[in-house]
Length: 103
Image 1 (cartoon, one colour):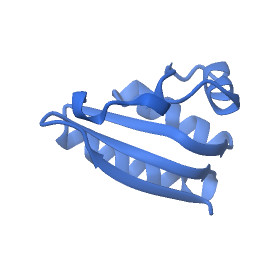
Image 2 (cartoon, helix red, strand yellow):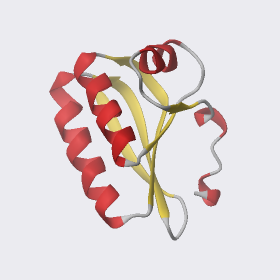
Image 3 (cartoon, helix red, strand yellow):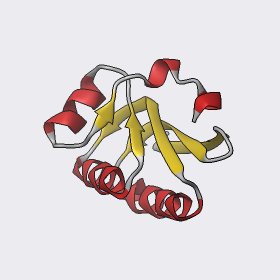
Image 4 (spheres, one colour):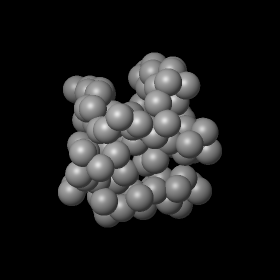
């Protein structure tokens, strides 16, 4: 599996995209387009990376741009979080216990 994206309703003002699989060049542009559209219609957009097993350079760049655009990147501590933080992506280390009702 390369990447599965599921939208989860958070609250009246925010939404969450739960990602599962590998974020690689083949899907990075689709992910960025989907998230950019959500950022235009929701006050808060969070990306839950708890199910992400690998991120390549294209994925890192997408997460960097989305974070700068206002998306919250939720990721449990581990290899994916370390790679993203090392590349300068702002990461919230809590995805495994996200309360979607509060977003």
